[in-house]
Amino acid sequence: MLARPPLLWLGATQSVRDVMLTDDNALRLQDGRRVPFQLVDKITTNLSYYDATSKVYFQQRPLRMRGEQRGEAFVARTIWPQDWAIQETGMTVQPLLPGESLLGLVRKYANARDERFEARLLWEKSSTNKRDWSGHAAIGMILNGAQGDDDEAHGGHFAIATGRLGKGSEMADWIVNNFYNLGSHSEKGITASMLPMDNYMVDVNSGQAWYRPSYMLVAVLKKDRAAHAYQGAISRVYHHLYRQDFKYRHASNNCAGISIDTLRSLGWDIPLQGPTSRTKAIIGYPYKAMTEMSFASGKEAYDYMSEEQSRLYPAAAYDAAGRDLMRIAAGGTGKAGADARALETLLREDLEALVFVRLPQIPSSRPFGSYPVATIDEYMKRTPEDKAMWKIVPVEPRPFPPALLAADTKPEFETPAWAPAAVALLLVLGMVWRSRAKRQRREAESRHR
Image (cartoon, rainbow, N blue to C red; front, side, top):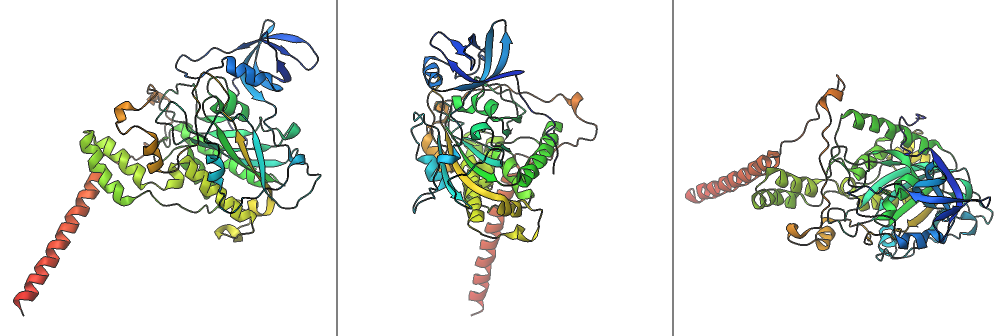
């Protein structure tokens, strides 16, 4: 339960805080000294990068950066706005109103150009005007929005963060458990790993905040038991991912599915949302297979339609887990109630507050994004009907070298692409046989009258 993370991706050896960016591209340090400011090189395939609008945004606030000192200059890899912090002392409880929902708060900001950081206290166990959460453990459910120029990314992204509220209730050092496909090269340089929140959100090449708005539901805890339980478990999941014991799959083992599965495995009974439609899955398989002349395309359509929605869509995972966390806060009981070690029980006992947080998209050369879709119907409304018209950022495959596989690693079983077609065919034959049997029975009864 108290396992340390085996690998934490920093990407930089130095950090500075309480610095201001000047008009002449220098950093003014807290002691008044000035040092030249530079950025790490842009990854050639990355579509978003720091520009003049970014500079205007950062000049308005104190900053914290990770990077390297090169000569007299500080070369920044991450730029974290220090006003991205939960200021609990000035907050009043603002619970969800009738008609409001967690997804409603996300969709409230359809216009990503709103550059405000927002923290709204939705629930608190005991209200006080002198609350101080510094040093308190926290679990954050992060929902990243839709990108503005990538039709494969309207579903957004999902991650779980753990940590402690730091100086000024800052979140920059929280560990984010970021799952991405190891089998392809990310155009932004993203690698599936545990990494600090500032790396996850504001790395100048791969940070989520450079190309879409993000949302978070933060559970503030009086003890660190639940955060330790999750972080220890997800560390073991990374171990298996890196060993290639299982593969990242967009339908069945994506960022939402892996995260939600781990929460459920620890004894948090997050309600299932059900598949989109098993009927559509069966119909969609032959349609896609024939129109695109590919069993793989048919199976992909089948998998998306038949998968549990809270494992498939980041927004559905965020909504299901978030609503259940609100239920726990309200005193609801669940299957885990009798197990003192179950995550749901730990949350019920240790939960102090729930805070909705909006992390804005940083202005840059990238188009602004929006909130993520939560269903296949929403997805299809966002994209051109002709898939040839989709805006897609191509990525190169990155096959895992067989020589690096552990001797005891067994190939993961993969359902053949033709399997759903065989199941559908058997169902159709069964329906035909049943219909024929009924017709023969009626004809036999008619002859005996």
